[in-house]
Length: 149
Image (cartoon, rainbow, N blue to C red; front, side, top):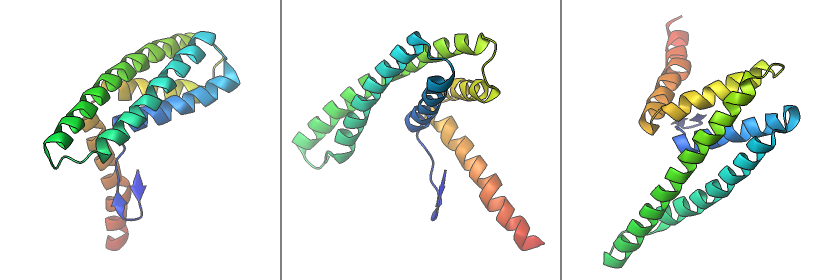
């Protein structure tokens, strides 16, 4: 979450995508549940559309009447896709919870599913604030302590 220049937070969408991808890689090795694989593929299809819509929204200029209308259309489409993605993430989380209830899965998989579920319940703002707290604790306070020794 940090860069050379300082703190750089992740958006909830990106964080959930990273965790979902990490779980998918683990699932490829340990469980191969067809329902999870199908739900993950559907999630990735939606994610690809979200990425295109985010790019279109971010790159559309809002400097005249036509640009404002187009940017509004992009925002509407992006919000619609984000809602679909959130719904698919919840479906996928439910399937993964069932998978976690089975014996024999590595604790790292269970821990990552738990982390995903925690982030699903948080708002984007909550995630940013927790990222700032983490950065302050790990980067700023540790440097301050080193300077005080």
